Image 1 (cartoon, rainbow, N blue to C red):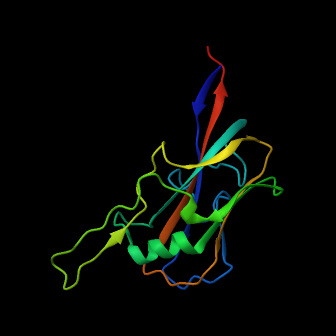
Image 2: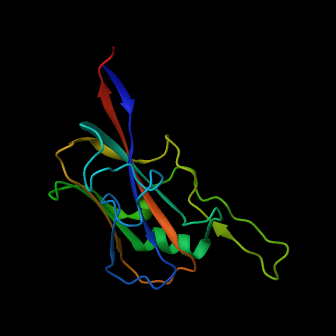
Image 3: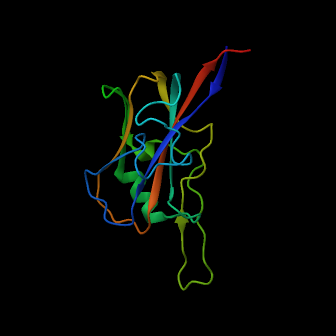
Length: 181
C-alpha cells in the first residue's frame, strides 16, 4: 500500500463592498462562487472527494478575484485579521477554529510594487504561493470517509469595505492510501 498526497480545497469570494460583522461564507459547499477546479475539488457539497482521506494540515490563500493583479495591502491585512475560520467534521467535531492569520499560505507576504507612472506609489500584497512545507499542522491526522460531512466557514469578525473583490481558498493537506499493483 502506498501513501499518496490528495489535498482538498474550497473557496469563496468577498465582493468589493461593505463586509458586515457576522457574515458567514462557506468554502466546501459548492457555492455559486466555487464552481471550477481552481475554486474547489469538492464534487458533492460538504463531502470529501475520496472514499477515505486523512487530513493532517491546513493552508489558506488570499488573492484578488478575477484578475492576475495582487490584492491591495489594506484588503489583505483586513482579511487575515478580520476573518475567522471554522472547520467541522459531521457538524459535531471541531477540526480547527481560529483567525485566518494563524493559517499560513507558506510563502510569507509577497507582491508589493511601485508604479512609476502613477502620482503615488502603489503597494499591493498577497500571502504568497502555498508551499508544502509551511502549513498549520493538526495534532493528529483526521480521518474522513465519503460519508462524513466536511464544513468550512469563514466568519467576519470586524466590518470593513474592501477596495477590490478577493477570494479566500482553504486547502486541507491530506493523503490517501492506495493499493499497489
